[in-house]
Image 1 (tube, rainbow, N blue to C red):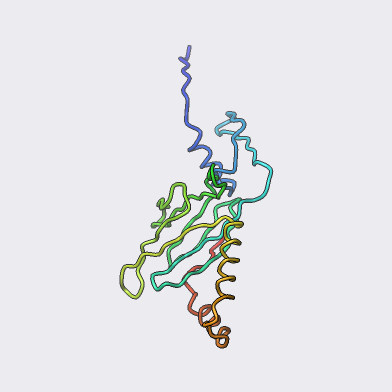
Image 2 (image 1 turned 60 degrees about the vertical axis):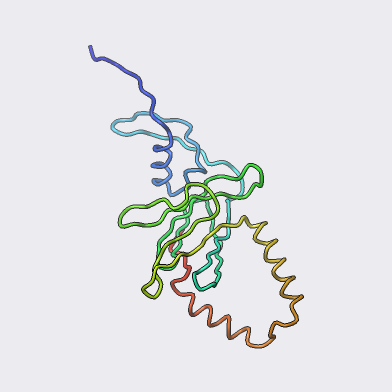
Length: 187
């Protein structure tokens, strides 16, 4: 007669494997049932109803330039920041402020290396013009980002010393030089 034992296995590694297999963020799925069928586990999952979390990723380069891009977090979002491939994933919400928290991984060879486990601010070490450079990044929850834009616009409207001409030329230059600065690679 075979001997039977029962063991407990943590769900987080399984949740991560299921998330990768389904292309969803692990923090947005709940495992509701696990059954053994033939030589595989059959996992039943649920995704909570509600709005898809969206953040604005803000990158501040070593030269002082700032770039912003929106990211939907129903599945891991991919970005390229100064040539570094990053994967940004929903990690939850701050209990006090209700701001979205993310986890961030960087592509290192064939693997992903964690830069930020759960939070809003991280840095990417990279090289620019042959020299080591640090790039600061953070995410903003949309309502927070909109409030910051409105306050920046109000400051710009109040600033009488700002030149009125040449704005379009500067924007075109920024767009041309932004290649490789911050760009999406899927998500």
